[in-house]
Length: 386
Image 1 (tube, rainbow, N blue to C red):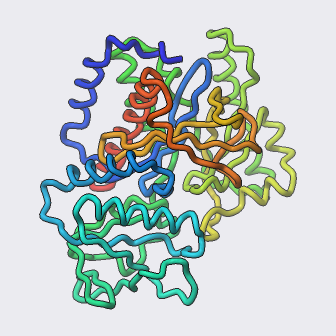
Image 2 (cartoon, helix red, strand yellow; image 1 turned 180 degrees about the vertical axis):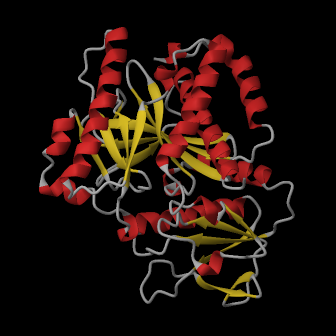
């Protein structure tokens, strides 16, 4: 698999990335989900408000602190306020928030956690409520941050508290899932992958997944299901042609994903359009709503990549965390209850930091493909400010 990109190209590839990132603002932080098979490796999701920092090893946390310090070196920030998601009863998520706080403190910043809502019950004991006075965000105790770091992906909307704020907010609330669409991101990635592969004589299909969109969908409406089914068959036909070209014997399949979905919600698989036409009640219900009760009305149909990765006897997939344009950690997401074809981002998944475990040649491949995915995020970010 690692022979897709020859090691001798490393210097040329680094120069290519340096030129492409020039003039762009890299995301403050991001995480890239990869799927790696015996014949291709490609990003299948890109998150601008990543959680899961509690899964980073001590070495990776130290690396993250160093990279954050470097990312902010042009600014005079001293005080940082973290604004997390509202669901403060999720123990694993809260551990993630605490680790972000510790990493920022390790980077030398005075750091507090602030909630947009004063909840009666939550798992953050040392928190403060955020208020806005004269366009300045502060906490009820009087802590005035120089910069606000969002760990809140705003699936439904930008809260009024975060509008027209004097301080810098990173990532910008503009980048929340209320406005992002997966298909737009993958269009950008595909264009960059084609350019990259043209430069280095690689088939773009080997580092990307075929993706199509379907808007105005309602999984309770048979006419709507017909439109999705047609596009499923179109993608499967294109994948089958590539399988024949590379003599791959696996049956093609697709993921159908909510275009603004997060946390593994709003995802099903199919091996034919007919499966979509005959969806059972449970799967139809799964495709009705995502986080915060937001209705699904747009989906992407994405080529499925069966994972070849295994870790501790479980199906696994790489998950790479970035600060700016630099990888800070390589994780495996594992799920013993899922097969190699399924989305592993589901109940009972586990995470393992394998930055010091996986051999260098494989990490190099993960790094190149995920960096291309981060470059696509940087291009997408720029589009929000045009």
